[in-house]
Length: 217
Length: 185
Image (cartoon, rainbow over all chains, first blue to last red; front, top):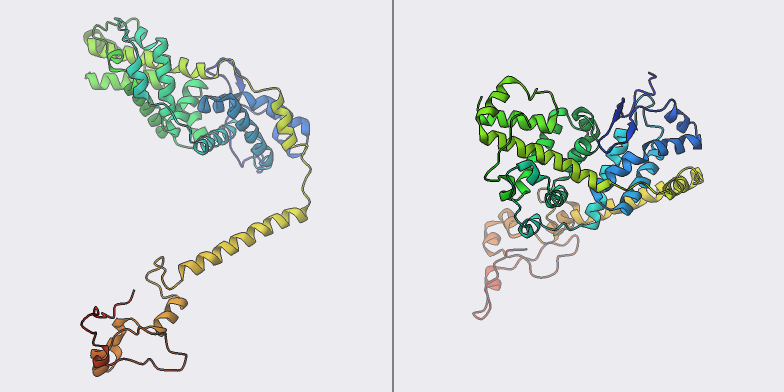
């Protein structure tokens, strides 16, 4: 590792992520170095390599493909301007994710997006009790409720949930992307789950005749 | 094993990975005997599963458009480098604007009526106090004048002139007028 390469951000192994796409979290050979040298093809390769995970993060947070596209472009423009500060020995993906999440939340705040209160949705749900809690929670309506509930999570918890459950990053990697320590990331995921569960309708959360076999768990 | 411990550890199992070894004997033994915990664990597991599905639904079928690289390229690689003179002019303008804002803030903060820095005596406020001394400063006057002192209600004296203080007789208000307390705002 060069002294120059030791400055910056990143992590790296090849792994399978939650939405079924292989993401190279290890930097292709010399990509950043070639970008720094002013090779336009290198930046195109950089864009092609990292655009999808960044877009997915932006889309998961904003739920607006057009806004996600804008954020993707802004994110890579920032990356191009900061190419001399990127590490050459590690993946720039954590940094790109962090920039994308920051851009998402600043755009959301600017647009003052209004989110429908979760209580209104819950009250409209038709009772659909079954004896299996997993079947109950997996129903389509519950997924819709969860979608809304994810929107109401605080930004840090929302980011934690997206990184951990959607991208499939480990807790350590999620913590690195979010710029916090491992314990904090665990705590954010834990409280996010607690909040999501509390937003589920009570009758669906705890059906009376729930019987789950130990072996099914 | 208590229910609270079992639920906490099993929730972590579902939520945070496999480190806890969910299928360990104490957990299984507890679940065999506790229907409440089985139900709670089932709900937690289903919640995590539903959460993954909900998040996947958000992004399913979407991808960055083909035009996005073109837009990024226009704003980065194809953008001509600005000459250093323009960069200097840009930053010079920013610095000038910041300096002007700073001067305005200073003027506002140090104005006589300003309460922003209540503990400091600004040059403006000091000049105002010299011109129109507040009633507390009457304590420095001779006793006779101190009793008769009221805050001046007229224009401040010109530089080099002494303040013309009214005597008690002169200051007595008429019956139909409210008394002048000498308190200054």
